[in-house]
Length: 203
Image 1 (cartoon, one colour):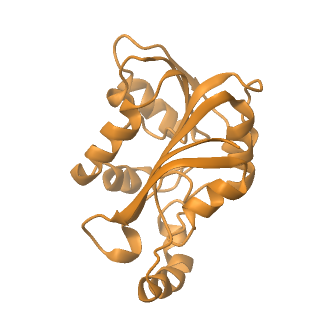
Image 2 (cartoon, one colour; image 1 turned 90 degrees about the vertical axis):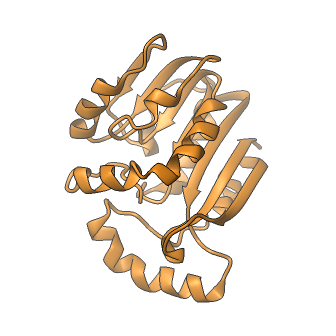
């Protein structure tokens, strides 16, 4: 899972992210976005159809030109979308210029995740929100062992995805205060399906 910046296997990652079991997560997270929204690692545009008012503008940030070309065919009616070819570690936006930042199965693959989270905090206005759904490190020792064992082989075939990143603590260590987080397994192999869903604000 996770397709941020993937230029080698976009079709494989795209198929994984289209799984119907992910739809409720998308509906909840994307449906909560408000105002000027920055989506990190927008990929091929799978989230775009889920945006609704009160989102009034979407800034779709993605470093892969190929995935951006795919995303341009998924633009929703009624909400302006601006596609930005750039990395999350260096977001080309002004400080405090967005109301909501959205990440969906993206933090697992960003090479410099700490720098990216710091950038997300920088561009959020005071009181703005980070909305996220990510998979990551399990609290169960046996599952963690498998996550650590599998990740070195998994990363090259999955666009750089890490199965074992501690999503909640990553967010908290990089300038955010968690408002809400729900954690648990979705159906599927446990090393790949421990989910973190929630929201956070700049600390």
